[in-house]
Image (cartoon, rainbow over all chains, first blue to last red; front, side, top):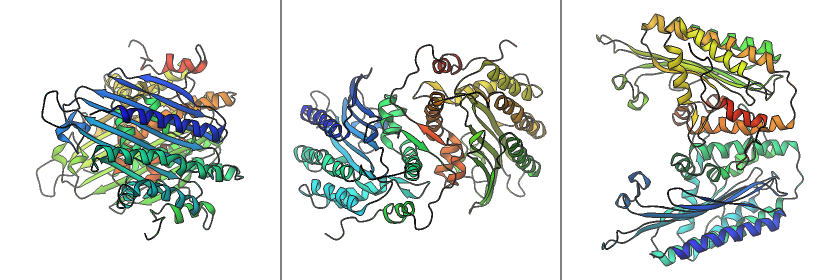
Length: 304
Length: 304
């Protein structure tokens, strides 16, 4: 299996997103390349204290090994012991203005190679998705984000968006708070059912859709006036992001436990976070509306 | 087994610590009592935006059940299925002044009761400890804290302090950062080797020592002048506290996974936290000194 086209696509995607975000922010990303002692490496791009983004991280990584540990894939026990290769782009952008939502996107590819000279096939799959975490919700933004996700998927099967949306709602859920992390989006893993070419095309469609899914929302909200109250609520809600990523997120936990590069894994952490004891929004407030109208796993696109 | 004396000791300890801290801070704790649907409850005491403490939480809980899940105790598989009772006091105090260290203390008791009419004995143990997390280190404070811990233990066996200090250094360690959480202290679990009366006496000695171990350090440092630089470093270092508690701390993870009371479990979270990409202290700075001289699992009391 030739993994080069996926490698090239992912590197290019990172560059395109970096450039698009720089255009909006005005400040440039820092590029930090790193090597992994066991094989491979990556580039972490980071923008801190920008004009629009308070902390925006996007990482590309391409790592490999000669022997896949049995624990690495519960879904594919037959891949254990094989040479493997994993690559992906992952990002989390934390805006400064509390009216701009935080966003996460990830596209990744994994392959466990058939032993040389064997008749077996390579085992491979794609994974990824994107999801939005507003502090102050806007239906218009939620619909736009979900519609862009749906439009990216529809050409590959009308069943994909509803299925990936459901997986997203289930995955980005804080059990200990009984709360979704945000308004969802799409999430998929272990995807290979369309064959390599079409599955890869679907991944590209998702990756390519990111800029259109998110940046129009940033443009629309980034100059909304705000004060200390909104900043405080944003910092408080970012605590949920930290709780999700450190307690539940598989990629984060796997990275930290498997001796990954800590600063690249924790690109996702917000710049400033606050915790308050048993804080509740005032009834009828804009903050209460986030909980009642947005953190509810809604069907944003209605009947199809 | 009569658990009432432990219950009374722990409740009283919480009250004594609340009163001592209020004397230092000038602001009063909020008292919040809660019930657990499956049995038991507790009281969380919280001081936020105080004069000395930015966020100080101390919780007492007493919970019970009729059937201990097998997963609850790897060390005592024979306790599975028994009626059980657990109680404890746990605290984390986050001071405002970056020259005052953050502190954690916990004392707890667990009993799995022998079935009625059986010849078996109750299975029980004590656990707990305290540890200190400075932002700017002072040898004098570290020695005082460790000496107070040692003095609390020596009457129960000279081997206890070295053993509990080592367990503390091993437990409060961030593997993904290759960094201790702070300057340690003492940590013990599954402790019953002195028999009930003496083991309980040791627990009381540790609990009683807390105020003397910590408050003199607070008094000594709380009026040290500081600026934005020190506050920034404090907020950055508090990120490590969050990472430890959400990624590694057994009590926190068990609580969150077992449907515990989230706000009481997350009393330990700092009030304001910052993450920065790949931040490093300037060579020779006061911040660098924390890493080189304090986060090193040192023997603070020298040869004995």
